[in-house]
Each structure stands twice: as structure tokens, then as C-alpha cells.
Length: 196
Figure 1: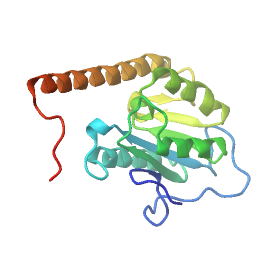
Figure 2 (figure 1 turned 180 degrees about the vertical axis):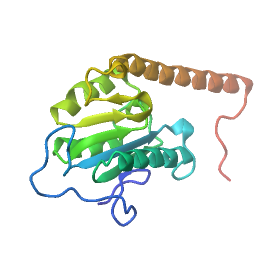
Figure 3 (figure 1 turned 45 degrees about the vertical axis):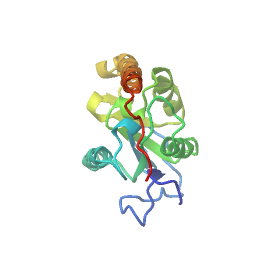
């Protein structure tokens, strides 16, 4: 499986955690999903990105893999978008994961928190409340204690508010970056580095 660098499903050559979902009859329950892939989704925006895969992506991977192993979730596969904003869902790793979800190959999606899935409150809500459940996919945001297997959870009730704050944070950060760039430009400070 070939994909662009910094955004991909990792293949068995580069990732021994990856296992291919069996071709047998798949379990369609949101809680079991024993024969399906457990998608471990990591995302980091451009503002936080470093050369290559960032330390934050590595930390997300460690957290997600430990959680999947601890909870005996089967067939963990990483989907990664390093250097992509959460305000858009046009991200290669997310789109690969969505294709696998729609094909019925994924039973569980796990992220470190809701903001890693995305920072667009309307679309994040659409995926967590409609798309994932319609496809029989359980969604877990570890640090937000969000789990679609328990629709009565108080933490699930606050997900919409958290998603709104996640979107607000992205907009606020964008405004601040533009203000700094404008101020530098007005002072005559170069905004780019000259290539030798």
C-alpha cells in the first residue's frame, strides 16, 4: 500500500502492529468488532509540525497503541495526518480511514482527544453522531472520556461543547498568527527566508 509521506496507513513492512483485517464474516457490533481493524488516528497541524514525523505524533501513537493493547482492541492500524489542520477533513490519512470505514473494514476509531479527529464542530459532530454509528463504528476519544458505546455518558453529552471550543481554538490561533505576520510585515521584518 503506497501513500504520501506524513499521512498514511502504515504498511506491514514499516509497522509490525499492522495486521490485515480477515476476509471472514465480520462482527458488526460496535462493542465487539473482533474481526475488524481498530483505527488509531493521529493528527498534528502545520503550526506544531517539525521535520519528518513530529514528537507529538510519536506521543499520540504511543498513547493510542497502549490504550488499544490495554483494552484488547484487535488489529490496530495507524492512520496519520502530520502537518494538516483539523479545520478541514480533506486530509489523506483521514480520507483513507473513511474509505476503510465505508468499506466495513473498521470497527473502532480511537483518537487521543476529540480535537485530533477535527476542529470543525459541525463536521466532527456529523462523523461522531451519524457517520460512524451508521457504519457500525465505535468512536473513542481517550483524554475526553468520550465513547460512543455508552450513549448515556455525561462526557458524551458535553462533546458538542468541546467540539465548539476546539473549533474556536483553531480560529483564535489563526487570527493571532495573522496578526503577528501583519505586524512583522508593517515593521519590514521578512516573513520568509531567502533561498541561497
